[in-house]
Structure formats: C-alpha cells, structure tokens
Image 1 (tube, rainbow, N blue to C red):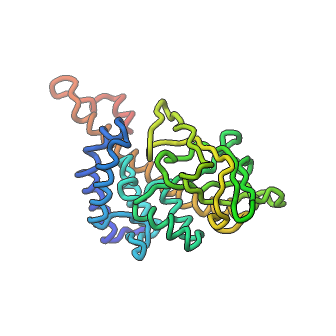
Image 2 (image 1 turned 60 degrees about the vertical axis):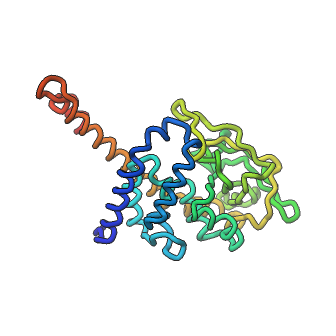
Image 3 (image 1 turned 90 degrees about the horizontal axis):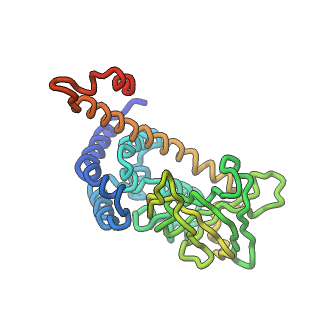
Length: 297
C-alpha cells in the first residue's frame, strides 16, 4: 500500500501527541489506580478532539477522519506504541468493534441512545461472548439463553473475559435464541444490555498475570440472571449472532495485530536504546556484548 502525504502527516501528528502527552504519564496510570486518573484521561480525550484526532476510524459525517481500514491500520500501529493510545483517541477495543457492529446493524433507536454517546466518548461498552463452561475456541457450545416473554428477552447465562466490563455502560451479549435451529450457526443472537439492569452482575475482575486491573484495563466475569431487556434491543436479526460476530471480529483482528506490532516496535527501540547507553566499563557498552546482540537480532 502506498502511503499518501496526507496519511504521513496524520501519522506524524499522532506520534507528536503520544510523545508530548501520553508517554510521560504511562507509568503512573498503568501501575497505579486507573480510575483515579480518569479525570486526566478525559482531559486528554478532549484535547485529542480539539486537535482533530479523535475516532479516526469513523466517517467524517460521524465526527471521525474517514480512514479506510488499511489507513487506520497504519494509525493503529502508531497508537499501539502505548497501552493508552487507542483509549485516548476512542478507538480502543471493545468499543471500536461495537461501534462498527452497531453502525451496520443496530436500529435507529439503539444508534441514537447508545452508539452516538459511545462515538462521542461519553460512555464505554463491552462484549460478552466467552463462557467459563465451554472452550472459547468453539463458541457454538454456549449455555447463555435469551427467551422471549411478551415484548422482552429474558437472558440467563455466565460469561467471562468480558473486556472492560468494569465501568462500562452497556454490553452486547451473545445468547442462544433459536436452540432448535438445524444449522448450529443460526442459533445465537446479539442483544444489547444496559449494565444498570438489575439482572446483570459483575462478579469480579479476572486476574491476568497477577493483576486484576480496573475499569478499561480489566477483564470481567459477569452473570445474567433473569435479565430483561426489550425485544427492540436485538442487534440485527434473530439467529444472526455468528454472522455478526465475524463482521465484528474480522476488522478487530487487524486492529489487534497492528496494536501488537506497535508495542513490539517500541519495546525493541527501548531495548536498543538501553543497550547503546548502558556503560559496563569506560567506553564499553551493553551493545557490544554478543548475547545482547543476539537478543536484538
């Protein structure tokens, strides 16, 4: 892909923002209390808006930059150099996937009530698909059910690794609505659930590598117990859940890959800088050690 001058300029603007405003605060936020720093992070989000860098993945009509998927991939690589990069610019997972999904398949009411505030960065969301009782690699085995009673879905089920559930305002939950469908891939649907619903409970934040995290930097175990939502909160059509999952997860895989490339490139750069600056003896640096050279190579 040939990178246009416009995209190169945009990338340099993101790089400058990261270096000036985000890199200097990473350590205190990531290793401290994320929630206690939310006011500062909101200020940075507003600053990103004022500089025309917010929600680069959205269309211009929606307040974004109208980037194509390949163009956003390049931006995503740059933002990925910081664990806070995508969050500051409101293109972080799982919100970005939910935005794309709802833009394509949600009703006008759901778009107005939930999607637009999400796009403006006023609220956060999460996505509930994986279950502790079943292997996440084969999601056709799913126990969460959504049964119609009158004008409502009644949802019962148990999910975990629901990224960023802590502090989110809504989730999109995948549940079995058509258990008798002959095609197993037409049994599940996606339903939006506001998280102030009395039938929803965040059980805990799951410890990942010894850290439970909080708010956006967390993965939750959640429970739905006789959780009632209007039928109008269905996204797409009944039985369309697996199709929508692929629509949502397809671009998401590219987003994730570019994020990891970004953080790996930065880590490599930090390693090289350290090797070149750490003096073992006068005039002799780590970079001259064969083992260090092998690690870098």
